[in-house]
Structure formats: structure tokens, C-alpha cells
Image (cartoon, rainbow, N blue to C red; front, side):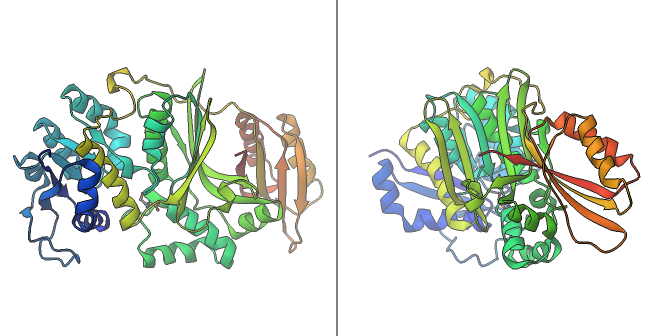
Amino acid sequence: MSEPLRLGIAGLGTVGVGVVRIIEEKAALLEARTGRKIKITAVSARSQSKDRGVDLTPYAWETDPVALAKRDDVDVFVELVGGSEGPAKDAIEAALAAGKDVVTANKALLAEHGQTLAETAEAADLVLRFEAAVAGGIPVVKSLTEGLAGNGITRVLGVMNGTCNYILTRMEETGQGYNVLFDECGRLGYLEADPNLDVGGIDAGHKLAILSSIAFGTKVNFAGVELEGIQDITLDDIRQAADLGYKIKLLGVAQITGRGLEQSMTPCLVSDSSPMAQLQGGTNMVVLEGDEVGQIVLRGAGAGEGPTASAVLSDIIDIARGTRLTTFGQPASTLKDAPAARSAAVARYYLRLTLVDKPGALAKITAALGDNGVSIDRMRQYAHESGSAPVLIVTHKTTSDNLNAALEQLKDSDVTVGRPVAIRIEEV
Ligand code: HSE
């Protein structure tokens, strides 16, 4: 029997407590599966006195995660503090400098500093693993790194922020507006400390940037993700999309072309018959497309104690078994710089415009689209009060450059009120 694997866990929020609970409750199962005991030796969090519902008295307590990371009786440093800078980063760097393997759930840190941290870990023959950083309990990092390692990955798509999916699906179910459901998410504890990380698409963008690196062998490039949140989606958009046979999702799409790495995390319309459209509430879905395997659909809980702790445990178990994988599926020193590129692929678009209700207004709209090579597939004008008229257009396939040029022309015209809404229709 091998020596026990000794853990130091920094961060005792929902996920940290889940990890402690699983290690206590499933000690025999974990030992049977890894051939050694997995033991927590020390923990660290902001408040020692807080009742977290688990017994922490068997473990040494450190107030400073950096001190925890350096302890001689810790083999693996488990970072569940969060944040791209500050204590989480300092502690991981200290752990690597002290020769410890690291497991983290910190997507923001990996999205910003993953390349440097991976290079540091690998230069010292250490592992840095992060299954819990992307899509909670869904084993998507493992699927890409291991299960699909024999494929060229052609595309990665995903709904990877449960809070946004909860808001969008509840808007459709209940007819309540964005602001009401945003407040409900706050009451339910679904929002990150900075809610813009959720509704602004940043949290999901971090996750997409991490997956792109593994999928395409490129350095993590979060700055290259085209980001747009869900704050401007209205009930009208949800209802009109539904009328047309679509759902609105905050959808991540990544692919690599000769032009560079295309990554977007933006609201998109997906057909009612697509797997994404079936996704309700806080659930996540990741679709992986490989040149040999075809399409793989992974769906499950993207957050919460059990699911996220389950993902943390999978990394700990790998280390206990002696499975020593590189951070991003190939040595970090071999990951390529990929310039960010905007998609040149054609797509159909949903447009919502409010027109000044006067003769010739519609003609100016169709002219702006036509002048820029954008062809109309479907068009509706809704019943309206005098003064302004809501108009809905679905275009034929066009490039985002052509569409944006048409929208610029419209912005300068005297016939639209407010900003036109344009949402890509993504074929999944
Ligand atoms: N706030 C995230 C979500 C969970 O709503 O999916 C952690 O990434």
C-alpha cells in the first residue's frame, strides 16, 4: 500500500466544504479506487469560527493560504479561494515553488495566468489540474484531454454559465423580465460576488478560453474572446425567438481557422430542435466536435457543492493514482500563440429594430441591408401604438462584417429608435 496522499485545502466555501465532506464520507471508496488513503492534513479560510456543517477539528488550521501551500505535510495544494489575483495566485505560486502538485477550480486565474502557471508546474515536473474550473460537475476537461485526444477538435460550443441560462429560461417560462430574474438569482445565491462576471459573459468566457487551449493546442487567450452579456435581452426577444422556433442562449463557440482562433461568448439563437435548446435552469452543456468521433454532447450541473466537488475529486484521484497529465493536454511550452480572429463564417441573424412610424422608414431599412449585401429571409412588423413600430427581421446567411456595416448605416439614418438588436443564429 502506498503512502497516504496529503491534502491542504484553501477556501472553505461551498466547494471546499463539499470536498472535505466527500473525502470524509467516501474514504473507503477513494482508497479502493486509488490504492492509497487520501487525507486532509490542513485547511485554510478567512473565518475559523464559522459553522460550515463539517467537522474541521481533525485538521491543522492556517489563516494564510500561502503558509498552507508551503507546509511539509501537504503533498497536494487544493486552491478553492477564487479570484485571478491576490491570495489564490500567491498561494499556487508558493505551492509550485515548494514542489507541491496543485488542484484548482479557479477559471479566472487560469484564463489570465494559466500559461505561466502551467509552464512553472511542468518545468518542475508538477501537475496543475483544474477539472472543476469549467462547467462544474461535467468532466469536460478530461473528455478533451484524454477521451478525445485522438481527434482533431473542429469546434467547441457551450452553455457554461448556469446563472445566465437560469435567467433566460425563466424569462421564457414565467414572462418575467430580466431585472426581476436577476434579483431572484441574487436571493437564491446564484450570482458571483461581482454579478457582471455572470451576466456579462465573463465567467463563461474564461471557461471557453480554457477549453480552447486544450482543444486547439493554443495558449489561453481570454482577451481574444468576443464577449457580450445577456443584460440587453428583452422578453420581446425571447417571445419573438420562440415564435420563430428558436431559444436564446448565452453560447460559447470556439474554432481555429487559417485566420486565427475564433472565440465568442455571446447571446445566440439556437433552433428548438438543437440539444442546447433543451437546456433548462442552471444546467450547463458542452458540445465537442472531433474529426473522428463526430459530435459529443455533455450535459450536467455547472455549479453547486456536490457537482463541483466531484470535479475537484477527479483531479485529486488522478494524482493519487499517479496519473500525471500536462495542464492543457500537451506540454505548455509547445502551446502556440494564436491570434484572435473574428469569425468570417456566414450565419443568419435575428434583428429587432424599432422604426419611426413614417412613410418610407421600412424602405430605408431594407435598403441599408441590401446595400451591404444582407438579404432578408423573414420579416414581421408588430401591432404598435402610433409613433414607433417594432420590426423583426431574420436574414439569410451573411458575414458579421456585412451585418455590422448595415447596422452602422441604420444607426446614422433617421428612421430607427434606439439601438437595433442583432443576435446570431448558431447552427448546433
Ligand atoms: N457562476 C457560475 C454559473 C458558476 O452561474 O454557472 C461557477 O462558475
